[in-house]
Image (cartoon, rainbow, N blue to C red; front, side, top):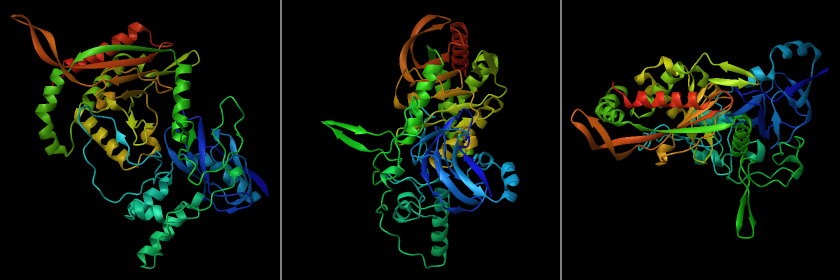
Length: 462
């Protein structure tokens, strides 16, 4: 017999840690290869982590709610000696880095890719989503959606997971029984008895040891915020995704000296172009054309011209990225964020960008984002103009060195030069704000890059 270490896997570029949402095994359990051991959430995705080996769980080193650095051992497994060599070849990281349908914890995210228009409606087929305070793993959601199991039916299903949450095996068994016509009546949606207080830990302070003192468990899934009364105020615990976002934002501000440059852009030609082509585009492609494809195209052109904006920093080294992969900030229904990525955006024309953006939007709304959909971004665009905000100072999405904020397009009187002299005319104006890392981008470079994007949009002619 020998020991095998189960380590926290790396689930994406720049991901340095993960928060354990739930353990599906306990010390002493005999496990099979590919059996799901625990559920983990990061700033980008959630995933179920399978075991690369079969054996017996000797020790679980971290509790639910603990945040663990990538590569740190979270559990040990006793395995047969003749399986040790094979286990080292098929590591837990390689198996866990491609979960079946990793996704954000929140249901039905709204992709922030358009201005002044709501995203196109999505078909209203039954969808398996998170009940308030109850989280489902990506695999369970996928299987439930494929089997057309409604949210209410899934919410009522009692499983063998944490607090009665259905596991992959539970949902597979339920689907088979349902197909045979002998599916048991769904149990009431009352959660199972909570684990002892020692089984749940609070989020550790980064300045303290990883393991935090245990706190009493609430009768809901660990991802659910817990509200407490403090006089007339309400105190709500951050959910795991919000904790990770909070840490990521603080880390970004501590890492990069932020500078923000703002420019006003006359996008009248862009607005007129969209009015002219939107009906025909919808007829031919079946999707709604927005302003975002043009903005992504303009950014791609500018990144080619100014490669130091499409970069990252490693100590005193500047890494210029070969690919131009543009991320779009996504606002989730619970207020959290995720950033799906358009890979090699510079190789796509306006039509290709429109289709790529629409595809990512639909994938996000259906909770089917893959790890590859959020990996390897080199530049990010956030569109707060959707909410009629005109100016913002976004925080850089590490390890990138710049992020573009897109404001609301509004009509304004402006002085326009004509062959007969200057006149006052109604124009469509928009503010763009570029936050950049002053370690690698100075004011001259930041200003020139932003001006390049603005000029490309002002001269838009397709």
